Image (cartoon, rainbow, N blue to C red):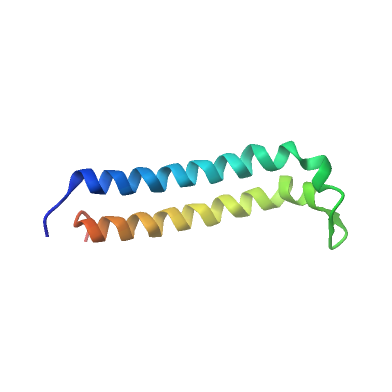
Length: 83
């Protein structure tokens, strides 16, 4: 299989930017609106508190596994995967 470095980098870069946007959203954007989110209650806890204490951490772990699997798929499709 021919390696197309430009296409591989383009796809990898796109995935990276998507993950960076999601990271910024869960790191900053959600916390800017914590007071507004606190008006919503889930199982007795304010949503803003939950997102600040646990929700963002869960999102980061999911993002790590998603990034890893998507990058592996890109590497395999472009012929640069490690065996």
